[in-house]
Length: 183
Length: 183
DNA sequence: CGCCGCATGTAATTAGTTACATGATTGT
DNA sequence: ACAATCATGTAACTAATTACATGCGGCG
Image 1: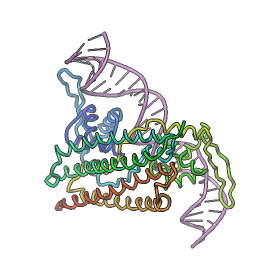
Image 2: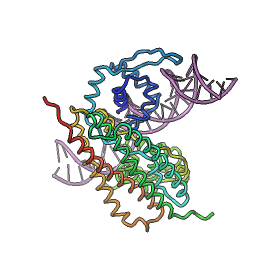
Image 3: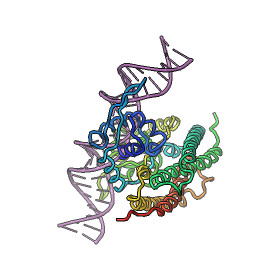
Image 4: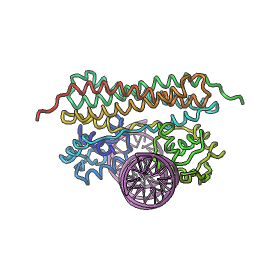
């Protein structure tokens, strides 16, 4: 399980509150390990209990207080150790493909629509990726080491996304040849 | 959650026991919705309780009895209905990318090894895909409708796999430029 | 006045993993 | 005798989702 480590990864860059973490997740490490704010709050408590994070309440003008989390030395050590462990292959789980196993004249239109929606969604995702890439990773060779790693993750996202778009097009073309049932 | 529907999908083709299902999963719909035999057995009980599956004990010569599961009409209806529902985007969860966010001189060698292992693993997976493709989906245009859907899922797997191999090569090349720390 | 953003959570449930358990037959 | 394959499960635990809950401040 990588959620605690994904959280600590985000905290490498900056100290953050649970709320800020949940938002940051949407545009950084959370792109590769999605989580809800509820789970993040729970996990933050656990990590603080284990001594991997330290927390401090910070008062803000015109806003509710927030609880800032900071990586401890122990946290950093735990991260370094975790990276060196064996990670197992993540097997895919996507019900779209399960649904495709059940393709018929009756649902071809629906599946076409679902794939179109997915395509649209992925285009938005790619737009985000490209924005990040242009901003921070335009020249990958000159990046410091850690940034190169982030770039490689980003690159994986971009490549996967582009490949998915191409597959959608193939799939939509093939689905287009299936006739609707006559009423 | 697509596990019950993945199970029923497998049972569209053939009546099977839990044990057979668990094995069949490895080379069919389970490629897109992995599950353990324990979970499958649990789910089979639930599905039988709900009336979507019917079960019958079958004696075998020289082997233990098995419990054969068959899709009921209600099960088929439930499947058809499920396909027409909205499926939500499956967000990726792969700790390899989380680890890459933590790339440093100290772990570059380890991550290189991990990516190599993943590459190897994916090549084996692709070999399986291609074997299935040659056997059953050599000429996709002439397939009956449902088979076209299965082919599209398979194609997605193949394309994703090929893309992943290419990414691994890019990543390995980049990681190769990082110097080890001096002891 | 009501909605949105900020900020933090608890509770209940479902899904998934890991470990453990049993017992028969076939091959070495 | 021992391991492997066939066959079915239970129990305990961890992870993740869904629903619910609260309260302040600013904006229209």
